[in-house]
Length: 214
Image 1 (cartoon, one colour):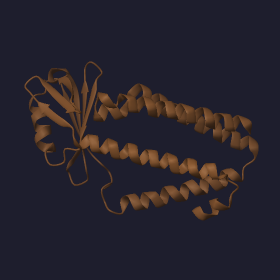
Image 2: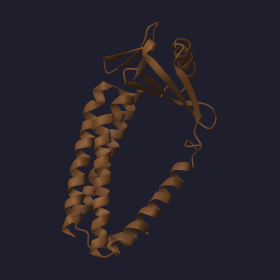
Image 3: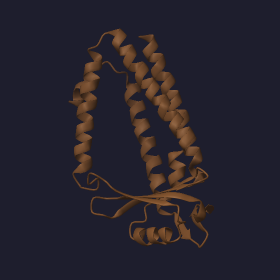
Image 4: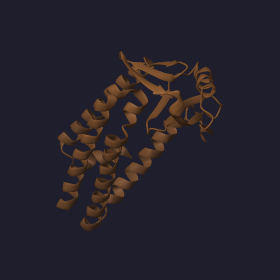
């Protein structure tokens, strides 16, 4: 199905751009996971210390408002979400073997007003067939939608481009304001959130300009 796209009059720069984008995403993902594996968490009587790349962040245990524990379908903890009264957030992951001990250390030191919520994922995202199946499904839907868009008239195509432009802009604002990457991997990754936000704003303007051109 994807080979049919190669018959479309897309200039070589289009394919080169796609290769560059995917290459950059691979490099960013590899560096992110490598840095995540080097993170250290220390629990004292008063605070949680997260250290990565010689940068230490401290969070007071007395300020914890709620703790959310996300588990896999087999019951193993995947991630801890910690919310503080001062609107700070701390997400802890990648501690596969010590997650239960880490969770117990935190829960024993929570104040009496803190709430604990335990959730379980509805699907086994770690199954060997999950991502191949997901990839096939996304590929099928993407190519189907792309073919349908090509069969629309100019006015409908313009609406679709404007919609995707607005969606991309909302993602950019989310990365700039919420900083999901630095929240999970440390404040030294804040620039990555800003870079993602700026890149998506540029993509938003590009998509919008193409849509208005139609």
